[in-house]
Image 1 (tube, helix red, strand yellow):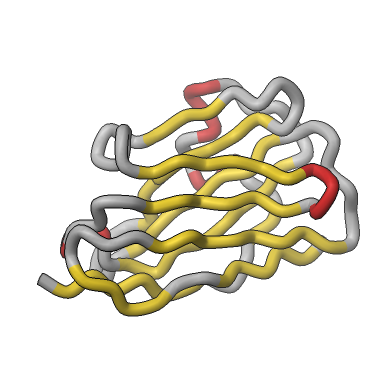
Image 2 (cartoon, rainbow, N blue to C red):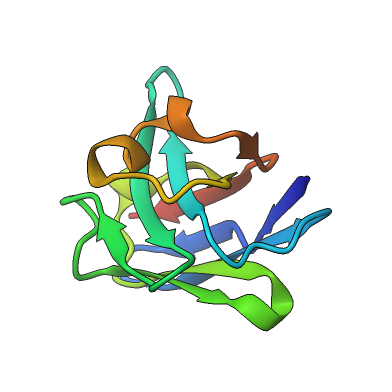
Length: 126
């Protein structure tokens, strides 16, 4: 299984970006996909997750109301729409996938995901 993240870039505060995570090597009809981010010198933090069966979504408090995670099963791709970006959103963003439908307490933790993408840099200037 390979995950290819894309869509990062440099944007001014208040702007928007859409990240994509394309999955190859396996078709996910169930399981969990998530986005995490890691700023320099900090731990990898949960951003958002989606259960592929049912479509339930979960967000970190810091992005709730600004970011939206969605999926296109036909394209085997998960998206992260990021609006009203802030300088503190600057980080490398990673997508992750797991074949299991993770419980809410697990999907926010990086260690529960089996597969990871390579990361895409998001930089928000003030």
